[in-house]
Length: 324
Ligand code: SF4
Image (cartoon, rainbow, N blue to C red):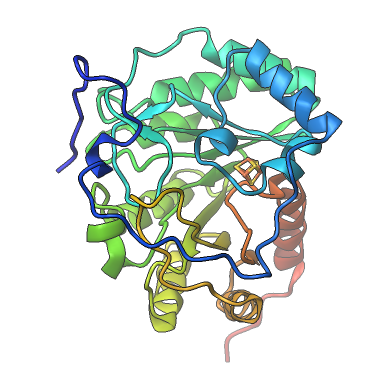
């Protein structure tokens, strides 16, 4: 069941559903998790563009460790439909509660910010909007169209919610023709009840499969975090499930605990284990696998899009083996 939290009369608390939870020990990060401090000129310029267009980014809302690196290069991931999410996932730092009505000017504002930043590839994500009849599908589609109208050479990647119980929503988004459709599985199915309780694993797999059925020209992408207590074999099974749905690109990164009220880090996965996941993933037929401690869905998304296109072309050039 999806819970929409009504906090209209309560003082604003970022994660009300987590407030009563016992504290989880926050483990010290290992040496291989190093991030760039957000102090550069490019970082300040990106922040100014985001503020002046009154936009929200997942980079800030989720407390992404790569913000110093990405914003220096003017890579930001815009989060549309507000900064309050109707789900309450145990890993996520985005605020939860009752969202505000949609800002009808937002598609235009995002398109203008993309133009000002000169982005050749943009990633758009959103909070979950279970309160809206279409889950925000139309707003996603309008944002894609507005970006395309003002920035015809910019490629567009979207990272969507699961549109659970929103019949027809996915079709509306796919019809707007994003270049990359990303929807994250986040973790292995055995963790769903504790990590992603509002979602359904096989619904998410089916969503990705349906995108390819509706429009095979769109690249599909999905990601997980590791270090949440999953077994290696479960990750390998999840890879097979994504390949069954014809997903092109998989990302794997280390889960980092935002506060002591969030899900505990069960393990810091070593860089060697990440590399091994990448190797195995490629043998399973993904066009691309990005796997490292600081990999995030939108990290290096522009460079990865170029690699995806090259990998697809290479794949299509390969001669088809004649059957005996
Ligand atoms: S990895 Fe993605 S979310 Fe994190 S700072 Fe970069 S663009 Fe933003």
